[in-house]
Amino acid sequence: MKLMVILGDGMADLPIEELQGKSPLQAAEKPNMDRLARLGRSGLALTVPDGFPPGSDVANLSVAGYDPRLFYTGRAPLEAASMGVHLDPGDIAFRCNLVTIEDGIMMDYSAGHISTAEAGELIEALKPLMPEERLYAGVSYRHLLILQEGAEAVCTPPHDISDQPVADHLPRGEGAEMLLGLMEAAKPVLARQEVNRRRIAENKRPANAIWLWGQGPAPSMPSFMDMHALSGAMISAVDLLRGIAVYAGMEVIDVPGATGTIETNYSGKVEGAIDALSRHDLVYLHIEAPDEAGHAGDLEGKIRAIELLDQRVVGPAVEELDKSGWDWRILLLPDHATPITLKTHSREPVPFVIAGKGIEPDGVEGFDEQWAKKGGYGRVDATSLIGILAG
Image (cartoon, rainbow, N blue to C red; front, side):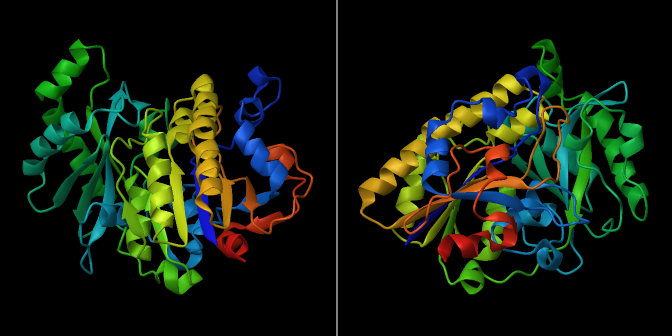
């Protein structure tokens, strides 16, 4: 049996007045997802345990079968693994966003989705500011800082405070003073960089501040094979998912043109997934675009991201699996909701469907939050999904 997880990050949502009470999933034209719902069995999955933040780190660990209560240490150490950054005992990894703050307001947690090349120049300019620390350039606005302290500080993800004053959400508690010092010292360095002067001249948002968050030490996780008796591969443009795969001993598939935005290489991801299944039992195919639209409060963009996932990933994946001659099953779901009205993640259970060989239909006719409530699986803990998929 060949198994595929197709995860649309942040795809779930809440009823929206502009859509006459429908969610983006309900409003989108998604015939391939709806067909899977008709052919398979649906339900609701709790991806974020009580007491944990509703982030993609916690939620995807859950979907992959790793109980966050046992294995979660923070987001940044997972991203460090993807970047090939080794964490020694005592090392604390921090996510270091390049952000845009204007008049004390978090205007953009991604600095206008700054390009990787531009961001790399800015990170190089910041390194002399932090000679005792290790600062690593990542992709676009996502970077990494390794410290020896600050693990106990309370830090807020910048995408949780879009359009809000930052003063109420700065690091606090033990170790916060050092983090605040680094964040303040970065501002004048960034202000005098040619990259930012050019971005301002082009009416783009400058990366005029850094934001430290998501910290933690290296986790200790069993391999995916040990957890599930399955070999696995991961396809994602996002360091977080790739880092989970590294710690889980899964093959990380590089797809040229995979960006983590709505312009990603959808066909390349599907081709990579089918190729991976020639070597593995399971492939985990992650698409980031719906989440990015949710954080931007872009309703039209979120609906479009869902429709592209349906047209360019779900449909072609099913077609290729049908042609392969394999017995197969697909698990389709979001990791969490990213409601347009909130511009950040929320923790309600998410819809899922499992379809394929040996799965009896349950009468559900569409894939969305409301249909999933009528699904034959009922409500489950997301850590059980891989077992259900393979069982």
